[in-house]
Amino acid sequence: MSYNPAGGPAATTPRDAGTRIRSMNTLLARNWWALALRGAAAILLGVLALLLPGVTVATLALTFAAYLLLDGVFALLAGIRASRHHERALPFILEGVVSLIAGAVAAVWPAASLFALVFLIAAWSVVTGFAEVMGAWRMDRTHGKWAWGIAGVLSILFGFSMWVLPALGLLALAWGVAAYLIAFGLLALVTALRLRRCHHDNLGNGGGMRAAV
Figure (spheres, rainbow, N blue to C red):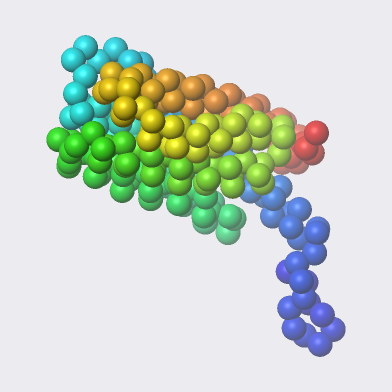
């Protein structure tokens, strides 16, 4: 933030905005491991949902609740670390809080109706998808911006598609959730690996981040 000659705050300059974005990207790269864990958890639970032998609403709800709780914890950790560095933490915190709330509801209410489960999954997916797109918008291209942006769009589209899947039956819902978790997990891992490479480059360059392509 710059100041005008009269002593009042002036509008934020492009240089100030660029500095904040570079700082946020540095923080993302430093926390690449949290995103990698989220991706691995999504793939693991996606495969589990795909292989559920006698799928019921309760088992599907508990499986998805486990992922939501893990995802929420890792997202909040990233948000807390961002806030400690006075960086933009809202997308991480929003995603983490929504995931924890949805996971808690699914865990304590596993015998809910199919409609209730679909509504919960759809609402969570759309909200977190917008948060992921917000985060990707401010990322450097070298940090896997495209992969995280696609993951956000995928989450939004998956949320809207949940309204169609119940008409196809519970098995189709389970397969839809499994396919989403696996695809999202792969995109998260791609983003995490790009962040890890940039973090190592940053350490090798003495703290200077590479410019965006």
